[in-house]
Image (cartoon, rainbow, N blue to C red; front, side, top):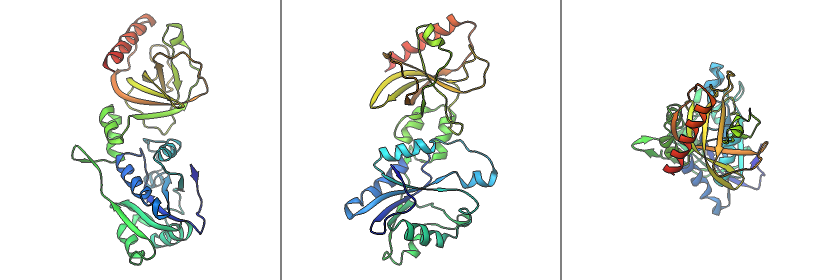
Length: 302
């Protein structure tokens, strides 16, 4: 994956514009469009944003389906090798839409094709849209445009907002259906209290990024990716109320049929299905008994 600040003047690009939070099925349709023009000599390139306009004006920090690092990995997995990422700040939110097209998309990124959803908005007060792109294309002589139709799931248009609502409600299967894969989080395995190892149920612990949207605290069936290997497991999202009074949210995963030291390794934990809410047990033995029951249930349902 290459983060670009410009494109060689001898290269023409097929550009997909969007926030791409989640890189869901609707986004994938957009990516497939620009990749399909590679045979014409156009380099597939994603134009995306670091931050959001709403956060800039409100001063708040919204929770995201994918951190920037996760987003870039998913785009690369989808076949995208070049990304232009624009930071949202006082200069970029006031960018004149026509100047944006001319100076960024045409002069800097050498657009031969620009693809986006029909509801695209960009530039000062969101005044840029597909109609403006089409008008400035000089009838297709400067570049072509492609307005991509929305993708639906059960008669609802798939959107990052809709998926965030499903994740926040713990509806992991529905969120996964719209994403095209199970909702996941990535991070480095860190040391915990090692309680799981003392009771025969060791866990790989990951501390989620502060901006990462987490589902309700509880236990989930999961799949862990370690390099090019995959393992089934059980993940607890929460603050471990039975053994800790600290408010730090962690994702603790017991990986089935696995016994390796992976401290410091990067893993991806995909949350497949909600099993039960997190709860505080009276003692460690009660916690262990419930964990064993959960593990058996997940193994039997696999």
